[in-house]
Amino acid sequence: MSKSRVYFIKDITPENVVKLFDLLNITLKGKVACKVHSGEEGNQNYLHPEFFKPIIDKVNGTVVECNTAYEGERNTSEKHLKLLKNHGWNDLYKVDLMDETGPDAVLDIPNGIQIKKDYVGKNLLNYDSLLVLSHFKGHPMGGFGGALKQLSIGCASSYGKGYIHNSGGDAYADMMKADQDAFIRSMADAASAVHKHFNGHSAYINVMKNLSVDCDCCSVAEDPCMEDIGILASLDPVAIDQACIDLVYHSKDKGRDHLVERIESRHGLLILDTAEKLDFGSREYELIEVK
Image 1 (cartoon, one colour):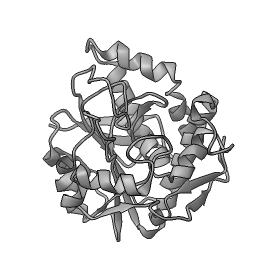
Image 2: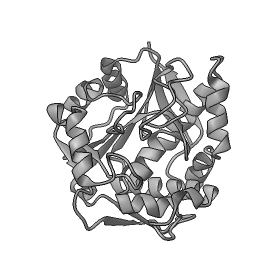
Image 3: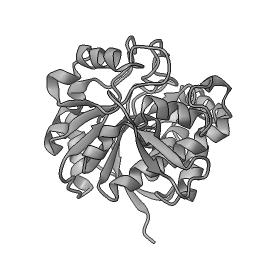
């Protein structure tokens, strides 16, 4: 069995996102959802709307997001729609807050290791293809965030996020008291549900820029601790996240240990192991560097 291909380029530009996407040799047909992170109010590290314009224009995509399950400026549709507009997403794209209104759509996970259902924004079902545009960085709860987190927490509705955090228990329970490993395994389950839903009509871009230990969901985030690394593209969400992890671990950057500590202290690598067991991607990959 051939290894998954992951394309990598060091120079981080909007044009190079398109260059790597073209190498994937995939046509995203029909109505295309482009999953981004809208960026919490006050966050300084998120990737701004204009960075993704060439690739979103190329696929004629709609920017999609879902509400959060914690306090902030994105936990209600009213606040999140206002933030999307204030951050400039509406100026450049069609924007769809997929769980603006209910009820949620439910994706079954018959082979789920921790959860058997994934509650996503109902409008996800309106799309034929999915382009996941991830800002790879650390995360205060998941250890790191990349393609798998965008598929799972990112596409989950507000209720669905709580459901994942609490591993199928009370979605409104205190997420800080949830079992950490169960939460990580639940993310892998949810990621598998969304990836399999699109059945070969999905592609993944990870941008390793502004490498903070904190996520773009943090209104007060640490500044980046590492220098920018590059852009990666793949059709395999497991392989692309594994490749990003390997680039961090093999780095000689002075901030590398700080990011690795965040990843390992939250048991973040467990999502890769669980995702591979769910058989929707592989940790084995071929890294193809592009000049």
